[in-house]
Length: 249
Length: 268
Image (cartoon, rainbow over all chains, first blue to last red; front, side, top):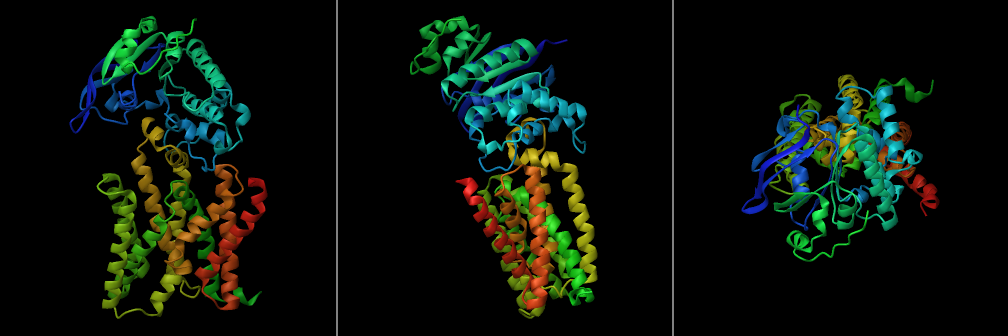
């Protein structure tokens, strides 16, 4: 039985003649904590959208839990927190609880109602993400950080095995950002959930993750984060435009 | 018994009005949150082609309106998702196409007459027993569909991208909403009229949203507002001898204005 939850092989994606992803291959094993970095326009969000089945690659393959992604039916096993989630619909008349509950829709299945176990899972997801007290608040009335946690609770409500987050800390203040990454770390350690997140924060990469993927159309590295203390590698990924801030453990 | 309840046509108007008052906001809430508010108007105008075809061929106008409206709903959604044109342009193309076809067919049918006026602006005296049966049957179908697919429709409405990532076929749910809207619009046509149907789907929902509660509560409040608007609109229409469609919509807008003023303090 495979221990990989995500297997990407020789992935290519082009729009017209514009190559976005070129020959990208990597595996993510169960329980791994992975950061994905790279310059803007380097294909990070595109790669995630391919893994999520929102984009079809020009060639290559993605396998999820050992099955080809194209026919993978249990997509609810992959929780997703989209980019700019904190700018979600301001006027949408829904409470935090309703939003989190929607994250369990696919797991419950069509024509089926939420049962006791589902409601318990939703309540647990809200507790885990620290938003249980915001249950009845409208999503548009929450702060950026609170909304971000609600969207994480929504991703957790489906009992995922993998959590993918696309720049989850954008729009969140520094103190909340620190707490947020601690929370992700604990989630990975305590619940065993595989985490893959996109970030520009190299400090987080150096401090938190087990594995780092560095993408700029091609996969420039797939290694442990210690490598990222080397200026040369950062220059390759970011073209020398980003000054890394490396925090100690 | 008050005089108003002694006439069969008024009882039919109240029965169809009550069904309509429930289904219009139930679909309308999904249209409003998806920024589809004006889609209802487009479909209503297009459905006039069906009414005109019915008048020309001396067949059941609402049947023609239903067929044209549903086909147009599917067509708009397909053109919109093909990305050949902007979504807004897809709606506009069908809007003008529908109106043009209606005008051509009406001129062939002998021009504008009293019957057409009732379909445009609504009239309490035009609801036939056949209309009532059609509205009741399709009304139940619409409510059952929304009830069964509520959680999926909510998920797709709030975050279509995530719903797709979770394996939901969002395009199918979008199609369900727009086809149900097309059906509801035709059902509302005899009482509210094609030109004002959109208001009944949108105004009660927008009013309920001023209370800033949950999605589910917004839905129930909008049904309540819609029922009050339709029933009081019909009563006023009867006693003042004025067009029912306009009266219902003015009542709904009046409620919106009052609620907006009451909740203004809370907002600030």
